[in-house]
View 1 (spheres, rainbow, N blue to C red):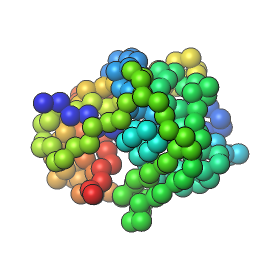
View 2 (cartoon, rainbow, N blue to C red):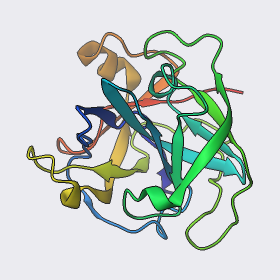
View 3 (cartoon, rainbow, N blue to C red):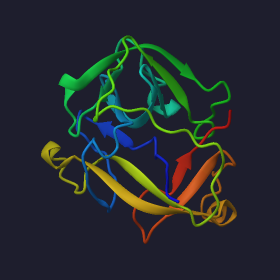
View 4 (cartoon, rainbow, N blue to C red):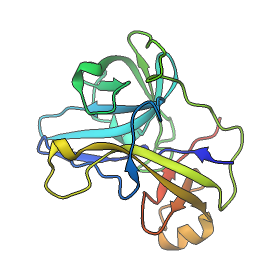
Length: 200
């Protein structure tokens, strides 16, 4: 059984240049991952951009650190688009950060949209896990990512990469900052290592 998990902290955009990255994998379309959204927080000096997932027609979960410095009036959420296209942007009504958020621990935020999204083949809610999955479970990471260092916007593509969950004790040996509220993934050097999760 394959379970889908998400790396909510894709990366940071410096100097107004998209500098996101999802390593390896292959290009895909939003129809394959219709629950995936892009959260953009514009700023004068630094603009953050993170992935998120749609829980229902007007609620998104994303990484807390991506929205800490952004007001609801500035935040932009792109849904239903394979490309990074602002014409698919939506405004946010409220931002709620996990009360126990600290650095990368409990790195979860809930965004409520101003208006409900309309479900289609490009916009669908994600299925919520009712359990934690064991080491070795197949998973899929998805996001918009650069695959080179020249920051060409035309090369920023929606991509997916297959990974496996690995033992947190082993991962913590390599990454001491890992907590019990995070999962580790690996696949021959492709894809991110640390994935945020939350309980309840």
